[in-house]
Amino acid sequence: MDVLSIILMRSKAVVWMEARPTTWTTYNEILKRCNENPPGDHGCYLPALAAAETLLNRSCHGNCALVLNVLTDGVPSDGREGLEPGSVDALKGYAMGRSNIRDAVARISAKFGRRLTVSVIGMGHLKDPSVVKEVTDVASDHGAMAKFQLPSSNVEGIEEAFGVVATSLTDTKTEMTDVPGGIQRKVRQVVREPKSGIVVPIKTVNPDESVIYEGHEIIRIEYDPNHPKKFRDAIATDSKAYGFAHLIKPFGEGAERLAYRCVDVQEDCKTVAGNRQFVMKTSRFEDADQWKETGERFVKKYALTQNIAKNMAEEFNRRLDEMPRLDPKTPRITFLDCSVLYLTKMGKQKSVIVEPLVLGDFHKWNNNNGFVRSGEEENEIVSVKPQNGWGDCCPIRSDHGPISVTKNELAQAFSHFSYHCSGKKKLICDLQGFFDDEKNIFRLTDPVIHYFNQNMPHTRKNKYGRTNRGKKGIDDFFSTHKCTRLCYMLNRGFKTVDLKAVLQNPDTHQSSPDLVVIDENSTLFNECLLTIPEVCDEDGVILIDD
Image 1 (tube, one colour):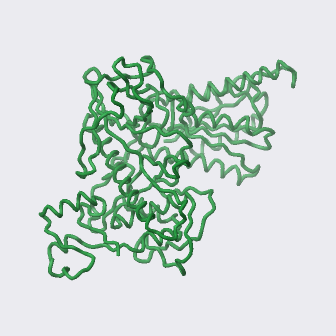
Image 2: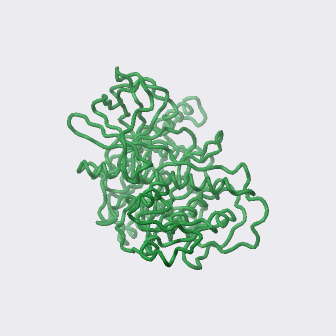
Image 3: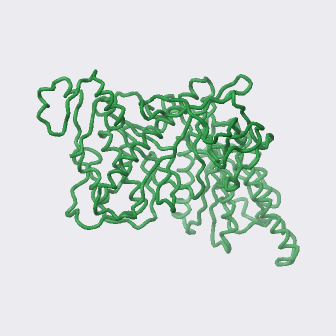
């Protein structure tokens, strides 16, 4: 059951209500107390934040979604109470108070991370919104979900603002819930470093801030592109690499993973080998460590998913290269290379993902439940209402003339393309990462694959991880997706052929100009699987581009 605590922001914080269930009884009591206790005194943040931290610490066991919601109608009074407004002492005290507030918010956010939403709702007419907005900026930098809102001063505006906070809380609960069992999963208890700190590279490994592994404590493997779903031995990227080190504090946290900065080290286990920095990713949840095999499955599934997405991106880019009227400045898409490391320390082994660290502005172009990034000017839109099922573009009046797309439209077109290119079984989404302006390319990471085979509707869930939502995920994508002309041009050439039916009745299909019939047990059949593992998958479907 959800519970609510209310703290009055005064010179000394007052815990007005503590851990009360969100029922109509509590609501009526709040109304009664509001009438009996009109607002007054200074609006001091620090005492209220200290009281809030105490209450939040009672939920430190890791499986509760949390919200810290600040309602304010003015800038903080901390550090200037009783001082002459505008005086030197008041200005110094105010600056010190703001610094202390930032430190308090950073400490709270670093401890609870993504399962905490820090919300600031500005009430009335704030003279300087940037002062209170820095609360959410600091919270976001230290790993919490952050919401800053300035609603209109009426019931509808305030109701909408609280609705945004409630939605964030629901989303946090959802991502912390184990889908098959409906049980809240426990998030690892770690303290996060600020995201802004990653711009400073690791030059020398500090053993007090890092976990260091020597050469005999490391096994490196990577996905083998020549053997689907198999891995091979990997080597470090620098010839001087002997060991491996990662920081104790993660700098990033997603719905499934924690991200740590890491480097290869030389034999002294302090000097960084080479000039490349990396990101180490592990499961965000403690249950991944319950058995060694659980963590191993997690990282191998991650590597497999990312490599499937990378192969799909290469096919997508090839299609773009073949479009004569496509704007030559159109970006291309790639996914970061990644490897799996088995790290052993004091007899305990853990499995992690390692990929290159890319600096820049991190963006999310869509997610796994229908969200689509907006903000860029869109080009011609084509109806995507399903005719023969999701993903079928309605023909446009004319496909003549130059084709230009925004970055956002290109990303959405890739997700749509992945659905057709996989025989309408896989849809790659949750596109997130960086855009390399110099190379004009998306560098993406941590994708989601929604998988659903209409011929085998009872295929096991979570085939590509917990974020794989199957048919529901595919439906959610197309419910918000708007096709552009690029979608139509990319996807109009696909045909789906039932390979198993062809192999069972070869005489029926020998006349097809699009198909070469091969023996299922032949070497050529296996070579096809190796050459185009995502176009000819385990369900026996190949795609012919006519």
